[in-house]
Amino acid sequence: MADQVIETDLERRSGEWQRNAGEAAPEAKKFLQGPQHRQFELWQAVKIFRELVYGFRKLHFVGPCVTVFGSARFDERHRYYVMAREVGRLLARSGFTTMTGGGPGIMEAANRGARDIGGRSIGCNIVLPMEQKPNPYVDSWIDFEYFFVRKLMLVKYSYAFVVMPGGFGTMDELFEVATLIQTGKLENFPVALMGADYWRPLMDQLRVMANERTIDPADLDQLIVSDDPGEVVSGVTDIAMKRFGLTYGPQCKPRWWLGERWHRLRK
Image (cartoon, rainbow, N blue to C red; front, top):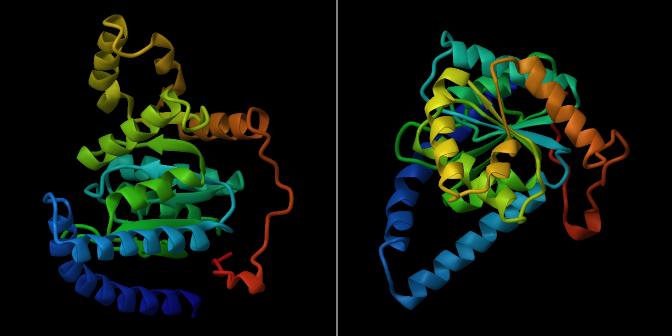
């Protein structure tokens, strides 16, 4: 019965997503095409602020997260999908909320793994005219029109980042996190690259950059390269618990007088 309710809700939201995608794309594209009419730019600023506030309110109570990045294009038979699903299971077993971009492929796999054992599974979905819509394994999700707002939410609530093979978007997310850590804007949270063969050329390039001193050799120390989900999740848990003092203690609760409502997640 619960699964039927979830599927019905997903179908309804998918219909909304398709309508929103068609409406949002031209406006977001226009926003990035240089100076616009002041009224239009003011309206965009209001929409961005509204997305930020909504994201803060909805994600404030989801608990400590680990974000899994990766391609939307792998199906469930692919070895990277299988690997990401196991990561989601192990993260949930360790008490973390699994957060992804909410779409198909690697994102679906990680959310699905968390759902497999009753863990919390969150998606921050981007509204696009093609390719991405919320996957059926998220307990709760937010639709974002702006990539930079979505990326902020994927980073803000996480104690670690697992990066699976992916394309431009995944690379953008990886280097955003690496830059924030390098510049001290983000704690030195662990960043795990899974799919060693896939990442080998990138690691070679990063070593070239370190040799040329365009990055500090110590910057490479924040990256963990492994194909073992157990090793990655164990390392993430150890660092989160010991280095940053994360515990299983009581979490903050919504306050009705602040207009906050608890978004109940599937147990």
